[in-house]
Image (cartoon, rainbow, N blue to C red; front, side):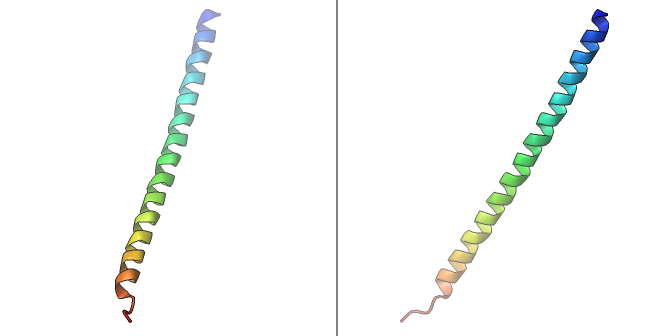
Length: 55
């Protein structure tokens, strides 16, 4: 009976670990996309600023 409880606990721990890994991976992907958007936006701003006509 004790072995069954230990097996269930190990299984739950493994499932929790996989779920946590999936959530962390999603956060990393979202963070990288956000950094990419900010970087592209800043490049657009710099290009736009330099192309501005001077009066």
